Image 1 (cartoon, helix red, strand yellow):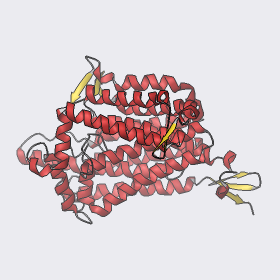
Image 2: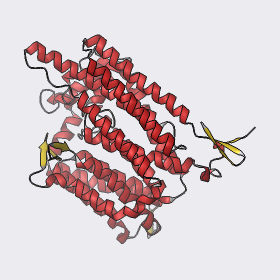
Image 3: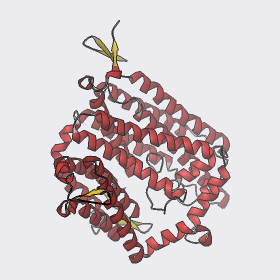
Image 4: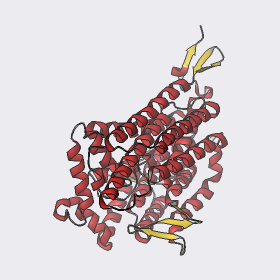
Length: 459
């Protein structure tokens, strides 16, 4: 698809997006068929789910084609293939749970894949609403401080008596009107909007150098306040909610955005020092943090206790080898929380190192496309917002997959678009919608002088 601009023809590449989207859906369908073939779990509901997912992705594509015709054509297909693979793995684990219940004479549990599909529906509807309603990402700058207040409020909402819930030791959830939701997932979007608006306003002040130490230009002490405030908020999340993953994500996000806004390496160095100090203090003060570090350093000495999860994860990855056991032929159900925290371990076992590497590359493509949108847009706010949103996806994937593979301690976050969990899926679809809106601005005809490769002379 192309549109005419002056004497040039502008390639929108929407047809490319459609072809890639169909390919992503077919990958999910093929995975589902293989699961059914090996677990003998074929059902009418499964095929209805697959057709519904395909229809929703088509509607999302049509919304992009209508409202953001110049947007990046790769972002939505990459997200779609991750989401479809996640649905297939949740379906595979549902089949394993059903087989176990049958063997034990227990009632068959309700499949989780259909609830995940419901959240996918909600996520894609909100994706379409965002694409249609946010005609210009720069309009979001008006809500900078409102976003900050909303983000902090949502972050600590689970502490409110009566609605907050404790799940697996973390106070991250709220129950309201029969629904359970994790408000921290939406908080990360609101805080990204706040960081982008705040840093655009303060970037010149924050870039000023007071003195040089070991080749680094250090800022003035009064300018360190915002970073210290974010550090304290991250520590409060850890102290009050026992959420190490969100604490790391928020502090890392602000540090990255601060570095991008100022271009000063000193901010990254100061952020690293504060992270080390905070991590050391948390290790000394909280038993659950010490346990996670102990399990990380030597999980096999605690293989039947606190290290059981990570040990089973490592065994599963080893069992998968290079090419995996194949869909439905491994034992990912032996890993606790295989549908949420450890879904990459389950995929690594059945798809092998090659399949898991393809998934990692897909995440890298999403991050690179987000960064490309940031570079392409001409306004500082859009630049910082795109970098922040791409960083949220990248940091979350790194923290989760790094924990599962024992690169870093486990934190308890969910893998974007793959894991079972509605809050995360909905929030991440909103992130992709905003990135598509920014990329549309970056690739629109107004940016032709910066992007001459999009111009094709008319014959």
